[in-house]
Image (cartoon, rainbow, N blue to C red; front, top):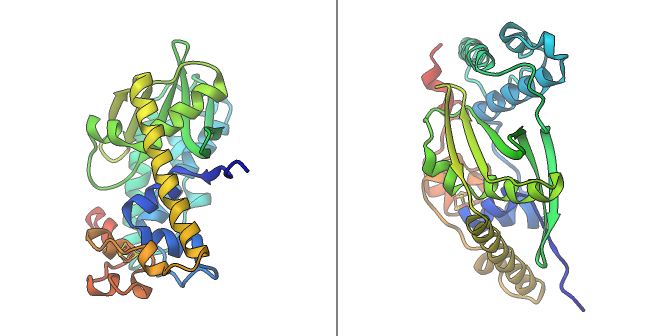
Length: 270
Ligand code: SF4
């Protein structure tokens, strides 16, 4: 019997690479162990992403910077902030980022896809993922990923992102056109970090993804066969633990000081 394909998203693969135990808590253990409270930075990121998605749903002549900032209010996610003052400060910053970003865009340019799911298969993987935006430029597809974190990003971040490479690889098949360029658009600084993949570098990332999928399937098989789940999905304690949803239920995570849910947006002022 051929082995079943491993169904995955970039986030599923990335979770296992970061910490196998977190993978187990997220995707294997049922019921899912209780998570910590929502994070303000996730709320902020989701709000900005939704506003951008809705902006592209407007007719081109209505895609103005002011319209984009205005789209933030109806879908603003309020969870995770310390208090109303902090939330208000984050909201103002997000409006400011969006207005600046929209001013850099050509409203008449129709992307190939906005929050577009791209899916494809190898002999090991059934991959699917939702790209923030896929542009069509000079006959090629270009992967665009929005970022709202504190720190700027550089070309190494774009080059090293497995998620972006997998989107590019899937987009080539879905749109039947080349896709080598991947871009991280950092809204707080208005900067773009880009990388031009080659067919070889995309293939390398796909191979790595397949290897990760192989490791996950082996661990799952071992547990089904009676192996110790804690040993097959070990903890990987480190800085990520402070930000982990499962810190409270994880023996290694409990050793690491907790981050406040709003820790990553404190710099935005209040
Ligand atoms: S708290 Fe740390 S070790 Fe535990 S699951 Fe989360 S990331 Fe892994």
